[in-house]
Length: 278
Length: 177
Image (cartoon, rainbow over all chains, first blue to last red; front, top):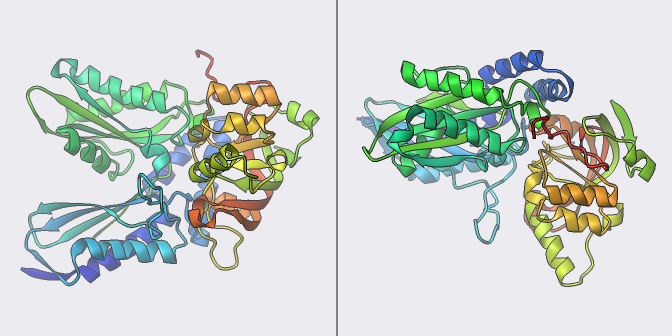
């Protein structure tokens, strides 16, 4: 067994959160620049402002967007790792707490009923997968809620099939309209059960925008959905244009013979995702 | 880009058209979900509001904390549609206009036309750019709401687009709709 202190995981989450809050992923920067060349008018103005904003944020170490998000932490924990020290979730929360304080990030987490803010952006939204090996892969995704609010889950029938999946993805983006800060990145979960399907969609958003699922039949859904979405004409910020989505990423898992769950998780154009392996 | 100084005269307001790019300078007040709920509670109880609506443009926003030496942290707009539940009544009570992002309801559009007011869209996700346009920030009400409190900002050359004009035209209307 390899021993690993949860303090190291806490410090890793701190580093990733600080960097994610102030940095767009290189793939996102590239996609935004490419989109700007295709647009004109208000949409072009919006896209060029976003590229300037990313430069300003990086230069001044300011949050790219004031919605520094719910702290989504995905761990792939090697089963040959023995964690020592403080409990894992407490250590992760501590990393989040310190990063949001030191980075001047907004605290956006509250009780769902009283709406009282927890004051430090904890708890993190932590998900752990046990995998083989003695490493820990840490992914940090600050998830804004303007886009999260526009996400949907469909429990399709097997008969609806591939066409139904594409229809669900396009419908979700159409109904969201200008509200989630388009051009969006669309994470799609296909299969699993009610809960796991939504998690697949979230994990899809940790892939670099522009990449495709290695399964060709899944990649073809990504391409077709993206084409249909960009035919909607919503455009950057909803100002009208050719680029309504920067990408569609699908992840797939086996499901029950009676069902076809499809989860569509919307990410705004502000794609912030940092990863590190310990 | 048209330079505008807030508050706008009725003539200036009526001269704006959906899709116009503008640079706003003047005073704006932040309020988002929780602050709107608080304002409504005060209205329902017949109590005075912490801001004079007749002198107020509301910016749907909740800033990041201000770093040392800055008036404000990252502060772009939040999704305006969540404030559809509140905007028509506030406009009828004299609110000068709103700044946010994304489409708003038909009820809000009708209230803008009825009151000859404009809804501006700031660029969502450009929080660091907007921080630079905010020159001063003052906490006005509900400090316990943290980022959701009401702040008064003096802004200079704050970039925005006329989203719904006083004639009811919207930048979000698509030809096929």
